[in-house]
Length: 439
Image (cartoon, rainbow, N blue to C red; front, side):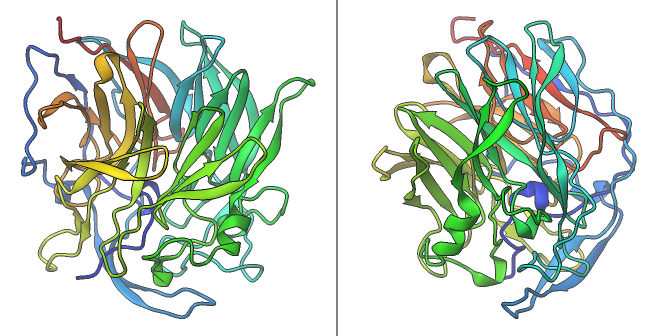
């Protein structure tokens, strides 16, 4: 059985949909339904214009792998967005592919934005992500940024001009996540590096501290992860060179005890970075050689690291669309020493996590359709201690990035995080009132 190359869902393919409006539905404690591993989902085939068989080829590592990929462009989609009812509302809008969000010490909500890529190509300068009709190569620019929203939802720019890469399928990488150590703001920049269309060696993929003390904020490189990956070709045990992304596909970052922890899905690695920029691998999540790729993505810390994964991607017979297997994603519990101590099962395409009151774990699912990612098929669910998965919010569209609880007790999360340019549908931050066990 073949599978698509190891990329986080934002970089898989571009999609077209004949669908019109999608509204969100909030399911509270009194109306929640349990999600089983075999839940039926809307037909993903309804959301796609065409499918094509392609062959991908990497250089300088020569290889080919047949994969089934959606080959149509995104349709211009005018969506209603979230309705200001049932406890869910649009808190802020106008973002370019918003990803991870976190509240800063000033009480503002900080938003990582992947940006819109750029026109610059690095073909011939360094190994590229596969070309032809596949997702690569990338072209790059400096369109990623970090924004912040006031308690009333007014958005201002913290810093712009950060690296952003866009591939042939209109999928972007830029600022993937953010974290704070005291008052210092750190950015996880996945859009840097030569393979993402950024030829300037000063801007690799990595972790940057945002210096806001001397006038205009400036990015200060803390950890060069492009270099780290190049210097550690044997970083993980189950490395598939056919699917290797030279600069990685950095996704999540959290700050714990003055260290930063980063997830790199392509290789399947959890990294630890100290304040001096030293990088080491804490946990190899790639599995044993030959194991299926699990694709770690989202991460949160609650005494232990909880790391969510994507689902397996399968290529069924031509009569059926390819796609993720519902219920095949999982959440690892990992100690600070890097030991996996538990695994929760039954999720689908996890792209965001947050821990609320009473250590309750909320999970954002990119698309729960039994096939390729589909418009309106994203969900917010609650992972209960007894193993049940409770739906909280449905109707999300390509949501990606870690979530954050605000001082008001509401949960804030990114929506329209991929595939849509601002002229088609701006990225937005939703405010969701989640009910406590007492409600």
